[in-house]
Length: 120
Length: 107
Image (tube, rainbow over all chains, first blue to last red; front, side):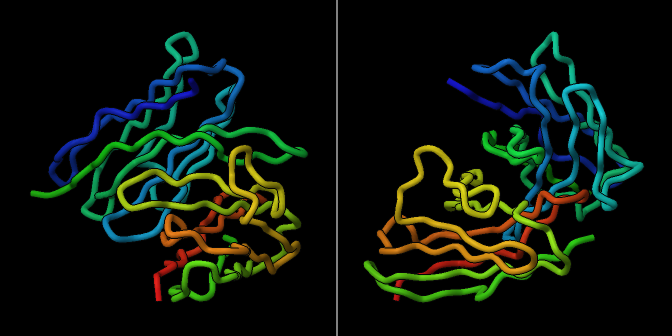
């Protein structure tokens, strides 16, 4: 079964750091690009980062310079290092797999998410 | 950044109705658009990609159309489990962006 499982969320103070993980199974992880998407409480979806199979990376402006997306293909894992956290980073964080269709990527498999709360 | 505007934001309908949700892009995105369904407390589920291609396992009552700047998601005959939130997303260029969502409510 194709599956993504996020972990590492929790309560952190403003200015603090947290590292999220996303464990992939049921598919050849190294062949796929991956994304992080977040959803603040009661709000819509916000894409925050993409990483290709060869670690080309893009970020949303809202997290650029504070968050670092990375992957370890040997461990079938995706990571999001989050530094200088702000209250507005409070959200459920999802990892999502990208698949290629007609030269463009779409996101077909999502994890259940991990909750990050930034508060003093 | 490309802005996506969904309309309506709230839609009241009855079981069996045919409904259409519109997603407008601030600039042309060809057909590089996806639609998702999100149930409360759950991750989004991909329904449609490339504007009109149905994801495997999605009921045939869901369909998508459009290109350029205007796109639609149509549900041909609403079922009770369809009364949730729908999002469009453009994947034409980074940063990928989502519409604000459309909440489908039972009339």
